[in-house]
Amino acid sequence: MSILVALALALAEATTGSVTVNIGNVRSSRGNVMIDICPQNKFLDDTCAYHGEAPARAGTTVVTVQGVPAGECAIQAFHDENANGEVDRAMFGIPREGVGFSRDARIGLGPPKWRDAYFVHRGRAEVLRFSLRYFMGAKGPNPPR
Image 1 (cartoon, helix red, strand yellow):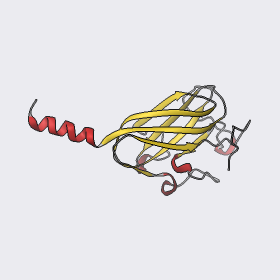
Image 2 (cartoon, one colour):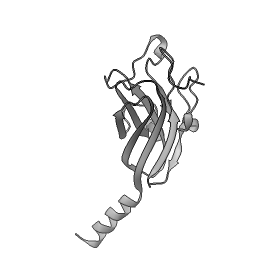
Image 3 (tube, one colour):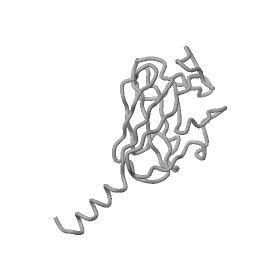
Image 4 (cartoon, helix red, strand yellow):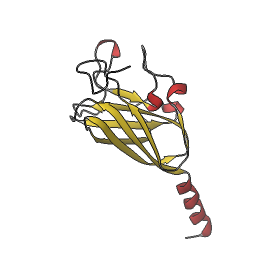
């Protein structure tokens, strides 16, 4: 391997890191908790490049995504209770399953704004925390704010 290739690989590794998310207020152990880590142009989209999931655990579920590049990004999460790979919605698009965003960005009459959810990933291992909000059905361990 040439010195330039080795240097490029080392530089690329130095600008990525894992993001571990402790997601609170998971109301049951059914299904999975899914997260997407997105740059601004993919926020609230289903096509984010960095994705992770873990079996749901009532209370707190931990999900880790490896190789996330340094920069501004936001996390969108949901509790896929029926394991169908998507957020089930009721009338007017209200989520039937728990949803949440980095920095516990407020969910009002619609999804949060980028400015309320983004954080700067430093390209090294990081741990973040936020909680899911449920709008329908039984409440989780901590009711939505």
